[in-house]
Image (cartoon, rainbow, N blue to C red; front, side, top):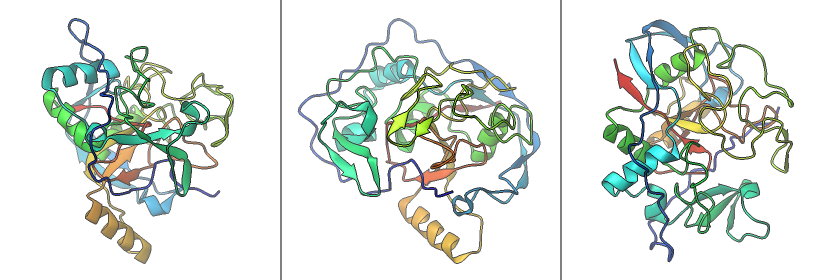
Length: 313
C-alpha cells in the first residue's frame, strides 16, 4: 500500500493583510448548550500498537500507561459552540489572521481559482477560508451548526478549551477514550474494517481523490452525532475530522529517519492529531485507526481538522 497523509504539508504562513470580505459569524441563538460530557475511568491501558501500519508516524510501540480518571466531550466542538466563543471573546483564528486556509477541491465550485498544493493537489489554498466560511467568501456554516468546527489550528483549539473550562486531551487519553472500554480495539466500534458500503464512520469511499460514492452519506463533514457511539459514548472518534491533542509530536524510534522527523517536529513545534478524517481511505491515508497519528505545526488549519475537549475529573 502506498500511503501519504491526507493533511496538507507543513508550510510557512506569513501573516497577510485581511481579506476584503470579513467572515460572517452566525449569531449564537440563546444559551448555547454544552456538549454531553462523559466520565471516563482511569487505570493502566495500552496505547500505541505492536503492529504498526505506518511506522514512520510513530504508531508503535505498544506501551502501558496509567491514566487518572478524566472527562471528555462526547462530540467534537461544533460550529454552534465555536460561534458562541467567537462572539463572546472576539477571538480571531489563525486562518482569519493569515487570511486563508486549505479547502478540499471537491467542496469548491468547478473552476474555482486558488493555489494547488504541490504533492497534495486536492488541497486548494483559498483566500478568506476560515471556520465561519469553510469554502471561502460566500460560504457559511449557517446550515452546519451541528457539524464540527474546522479550519481551527492547535492554537485556536487550546484557546477555546481554556475558555470552556477544559483542555485538549493527551494522546493517551484520546486513545483510551476512543477504544470505548475495549483495550484491544482497532477502531472505536471494534475490529471490523469499514468497507466501501458500510456506514460505520465518515471516511472516503471510492477512488480518492476523484470520486466519492457517498455510501456513508457525506462528502465533507457530518453532524457530530452521526453514526453509532462507542462503548464509552464517544461519537466520531475516528473519521469526520482530525482532532488536536495536547502532546508535542514525536516518533519513538532510534532509526535515522525517525530522528530526522523528530528534529523537524521540534523545529515546527508540531502537535499530535488523531482520528483521521472524511478524506481518509485504506488505499491512501489509512489513518482512521485508533493507533494512527499525524503531526502538524500549531498554526496549521484545514477544512478537515477540528478538536474535542477533555476535563480533569
